[in-house]
Amino acid sequence: QVQLVESGGGLVQAGGSLRLSCAASGRTFSNKLLGWFRQAPGKEREFVAAINWNGGRTYYADSVKGRFTISRDNAKNTVYLQMNSLRPEDTAVYYCAAENPSGRYGQWNSYSYWGQGTQVTVSS
Image (tube, rainbow, N blue to C red; front, top):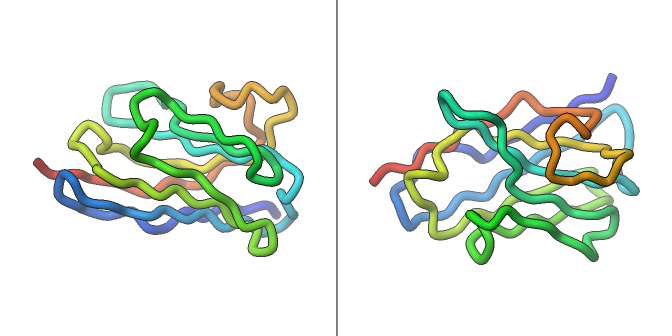
């Protein structure tokens, strides 16, 4: 059974940092696209960042460019999201996603596997 488990969320003040992790089990995703999405209350799930199989290519939403960094450790079957200079508008449940056969990294419904999400709350 494939599982993606996020961790690292929490409450932080504006300007602070958090590092999210997403550990996969049940199969390896070392050659698959991985992504992070987020969903705030009353809003649609939105793309945050994605990374190709070897980390050579990364993609970011404009709203997080320069503040967030996605990375991966294929030996650990884990993807990370380093979030710096956090803002109240970054408050959301953050989800990791794996395996995107279409390559459309920004489309949430193109991913095959999802984690359960981790809450990130940024206070002003």
